[in-house]
Length: 461
Image 1 (tube, rainbow, N blue to C red):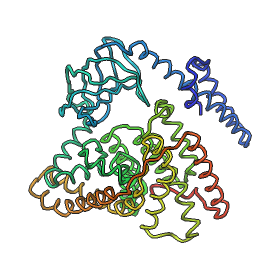
Image 2 (cartoon, rainbow, N blue to C red):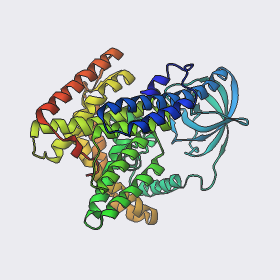
Image 3 (spheres, helix red, strand yellow):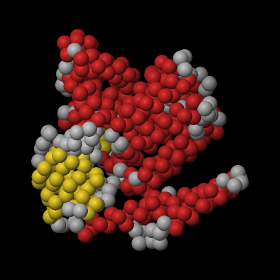
Image 4 (cartoon, one colour):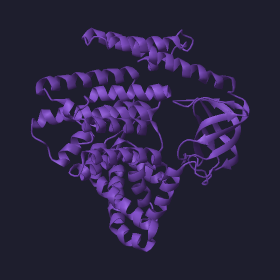
């Protein structure tokens, strides 16, 4: 609440670090007595801390206002994998930005003429006209001139390992299936052909090829169950290493930071025989990520969609299962249907406001494609490992994986090409508020009727 409100009052009084100290003091004070009314102090302290953090970042972003409209030269680090926009230009998301000897805050969105040699963690020097930023970017620079590229040895070992693994996969699987498979396993969405990416967006399947909680959850569940009968310690240590490795490989995007924190906290809670209520875990991780980078909450669609989907899968889906099945456990296909439908329902207003369209085939396409993803991920992993050491063997192992991925692409294409696949929709902001009020009220009514224990829900079990 504090971080969100900070964006509308830059000149307010909460810039001083005194408010941060006061916020922490109030929160600590609320822990003295475990009474319900002490939650008021928690809210007040949290708002003070969040407003200080938000205002601190806002003040730093003012630096860019003096640069808008000027032609300048910048140096920065490519913070994420590059992508190609609709104009055929290469898109860079720069961090650690410097103008001569001055360090600039936040991130900058940059487009340059198409170049295929830039990788994540490269340092680039660009020249162009500074424009106003948007979403979580402090500024933007369009059609900039790329002056220099510097790649420092050992600066991003995880990227190098991922790229070597990708070469191994490419030895046994061909395009466009290989891009889809790497999207499943490593979250490399930006390597997808534009036509395939558009198809997945129309079919409502984009979430399965981004670095998100779904990909990570599959890996954790498999690893935990493999070592569950061996050692409880290994059941946490191995998935924990997977979480760290997956984040290093995919990069610390908003959705990935959320997924890593949720998975890590859920894993620790399970190890100690405890569990989080999904709403508590949702708020805790949201507050943590916003304190790290308040710009996530100021228009980053990936961050908003990530938390909305999480709320759908961990809160709405169990309520619907309890309403229709009671104490019985539904089949895997029915569970996928509940989770897919719930994520679609909760994220729908954000998608409509952001993109102006709604996928009419998303639920059906997800129901068909999503159950196949764990098999595709396992197949791509095996092909990559074998391909690194023996390319000829990767061709043999990759044959059935190629057919599986081709089939998934065909299904997505078929769903996206039906005449009624997408509908253009306009929803005002007040409509979004009404939608979520109705949704929350419906969820509370279902909970009162079923008395479902959301406390028992855990994404890693």
